[in-house]
Length: 281
Length: 305
Image (cartoon, rainbow over all chains, first blue to last red; front, side, top):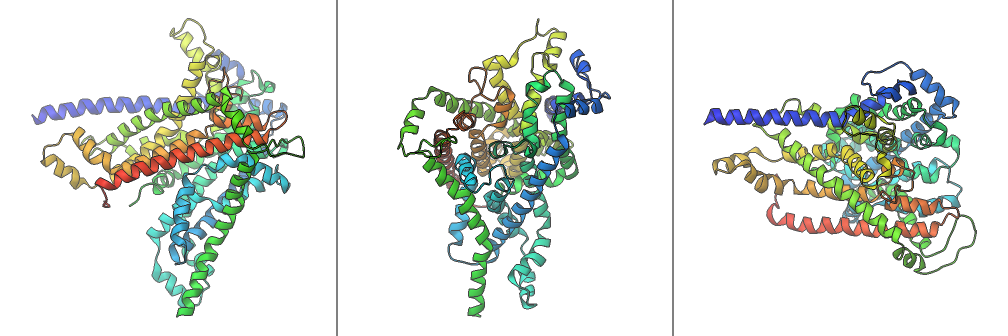
């Protein structure tokens, strides 16, 4: 009986591993092909599939440059927006969450429930009204219109509210008050260092989202030299690059490689962070 | 002491003030502005605009393209969500099963999650290249004899839709797996032990222990996926020509809104109308799901684990 049971478990286990391997290939193969093809010449790509890299990265890059695709500038543009968005989101969201967790004030419950609803509501669909409103201040085609809204990131506040509740040390805060620290000083010098791991986790997610953001930038930004990486990627679909497959793959690879590196460096934070907002203890 | 307390109460307001001001300026006002634009014939080309009441809405409801866009968006979302939750549930059960002891669970799920972080615009362009007429998929299929000659995948309505669904599934099943696993591992083992003593099989345990207890996370996954799905843009936009081709097969709400916005006249009044309709629809459905499932959830597991 027990032997039978063990045998069936082993058979089941075999099929599960088989399934996992197939799934892994399906998941990684497209990305691998992208990276490999970025190093191959257009001729090689047309001749057939290869899973091994070649040596045409530089010549592909030269083709991109010669067609006017300014990858370094796009890189700097995207980085600027992503870093600014990350800093603002992390700082102001934690400030808000600390206000909710650390203080009592009238309407606090309503504010928190309101934020919970905001997390669910698709604000992106008001982008047209946002565009017209920004154009009144001359802020279209300006990065400020992409960065400033992150002052009020409901999802990030929700995340920090959960997080701060689990790490809050009231005694330390009271000690700070006795030492005569200002309330904002307590937030900066006591709360922020304690909450650094959470801030880092949320920071990665914010950075990745800002880096990948296409829709808002595509609506708000118009001048070519301000294009972000996803917008440059979109221009790769144009006729100028027709049949320059190697160069196209390289342009695409350049926009995903930074994220892949970040992921392999910090996957522990990222994987744990995904469920932090959703699963209550 | 009383003085000190009031002072601290005021500090609470100060801490949340930037959020509230930011929300009013960048969250609420744009919603109001979109709403008021939707009642006008505003374009980007002329300075004056007039109030035209519900004309935009009326025109939209009689526009077959809008019906197509709404139907497409729902279909593309549902077709990816079902396999997404199915595969994620299987993986989560396997990875958390104490008896199966799947090795390196952390590494599997880390790799499965990776596509989620990659730039959707680049992913769409990548799949466009992979499935293009001279692309690797055709090369492989023809050379290994699966098909006699290359197929123009992205000119076929059904295949193009299938590719969009596949990409969405590919990007999201890993995240759903991680969320479901987190929910399952937080269930106390003693519940399962008690069930085994009572003679319950694994299917019964899944149905009567696991499923009810991961319900809050399932709701979270369902609602966030729905809200995201209704805004689907990057993938269908960049997979073909940016207009939902072939034959509007992958035209979504947001692509249609964008096309109105970037039309030669820049009809932002008409574009706003689409935004408002989708906003109302999404919010209504999201809150409905939230409300309906939440009520039931309280009935049979009101206590924390």
